[in-house]
Length: 79
Image 1 (cartoon, one colour):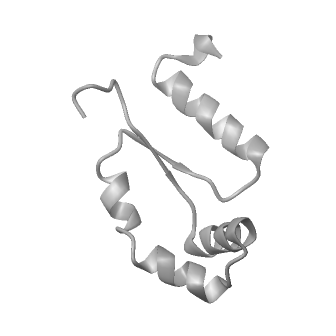
Image 2 (tube, rainbow, N blue to C red):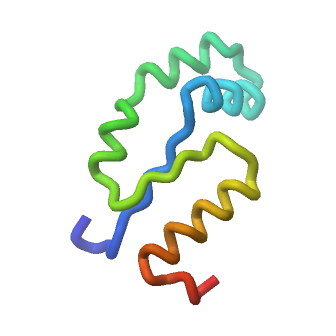
């Protein structure tokens, strides 16, 4: 996108996503998997991003990954 300096794509494995959807929305895993399968592929988003972040772990791991991307982007000093 020409209005952005960079784009971060955040992905998670489909099983992790289904579990999170199920817990958040009180939905059966099978229905969550159907919802996921109706969306665009991970490659669609990753191909359009400057950085891709995989969010399969806990919040601390996610935070560390975000900080790593910000450092790569030259923005490490803002956090």
